[in-house]
Length: 475
Ligand code: NAD
Image (cartoon, rainbow, N blue to C red; front, side, top):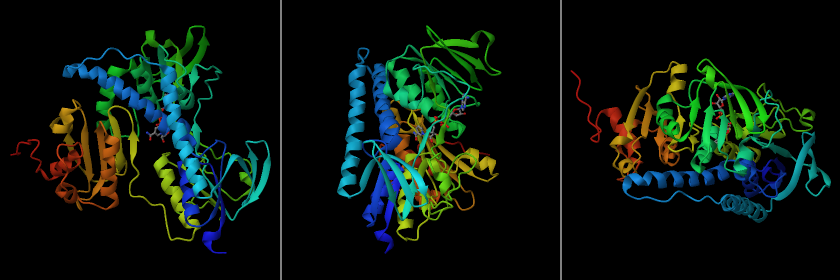
């Protein structure tokens, strides 16, 4: 049997799982894709990236329609029809997951709606959605079971008012007040959605700043805007208890900066967004040689192969960052590795994007990381107040920065805060992957007037040749 005739199973049909399954099928393998949902899509499509971005689009529209007062255009306050909003979001999910179902059929991938448990390294027991069971054997199995919201065990509260990202996306109502526990990706994205719909949002973050993984200068202008949108942002604060009362959930705050008269407050709803946990507790996994590390991630090598040669693992279950695009690339690498290609998953940069308004995006080396590693770097920043395009959008608070190796002048990292930062960061990823030096970026003609120019402009700042800003000569 050649590698391409292998019989493989992919457990979990999120972006990582379906990418692995589809590419494996394209490479000639016989593929079975197993997932509890009706169609492929996983958390990303059913209850993550896609529905949240649909709602964030709505939030942006509402915000812009208010800001447009500054430009002489006034709209009446929006009338929000929650039923239609929900069905628009559901329609997007249906369209995309249905499309993946079609792609699956076109590739002759056998899609099984059900849950898989390991019998041994190459055999799965699949409990199907139609209540039947099948024992199936494969040459290789790829685990792509993803992750789930982490919970705070002390919040022993069985209340529909207590939400995780999944229930928050269901948009049951527009609560008068919402407490968001955790100022990371999910808390800020979904907090922004609810705030735009009219909810008074309070965010509680245990650490000293929002989005702890991102450079502080990138978070600054987002923080300033969120301060206006949210009722309160409480840093260095945790929630020590939640109790349900008739009027809502009473939260007790803890932290050095919490004032005595602000220790308790009642909220209509609470969203817990304090991270995610890998789904590595797969039934029967102990019957294989797969190793699970301390934090619950399945251990893999650069080909995404686990300690069991027949089993591969990709995506959130195989380690951080827990991002769909990282999972997709890992899925492709695993499929190619199984097909016998000489491949390894060793990206120079994986972009991170927080889809707030403004968006925050970064890739490659961050200043925080460089400081930790005691690495010498030069940082070149271009403020969007000097970007014609940003001014036309009335959004001059953005900033683009390059993190550069002072000796080789190679671009090591890129950080952007501003509208559309999530789109712009792709150029940074390409620059890093192509080992671009600052000169390459500065010499690349960017279209005018666009926000993308700010990437070129920040490279010019590095050389002191930007004509869009003035830096007085020293000495
Ligand atoms: P996160 O890790 O981004 O943020 C969690 C935040 O909660 C952190 O700032 C942490 O310090 C804080 N925290 C932890 N315990 C706390 C406590 N007891 N009280 C107060 N604050 C506490 O996690 P998330 O927002 O839940 O998102 C989970 C993951 O999902 C992300 O790390 C990311 O990988 C993925 N995600 C990505 C996107 C995107 O790409 N745009 C969007 C949503 C989620």
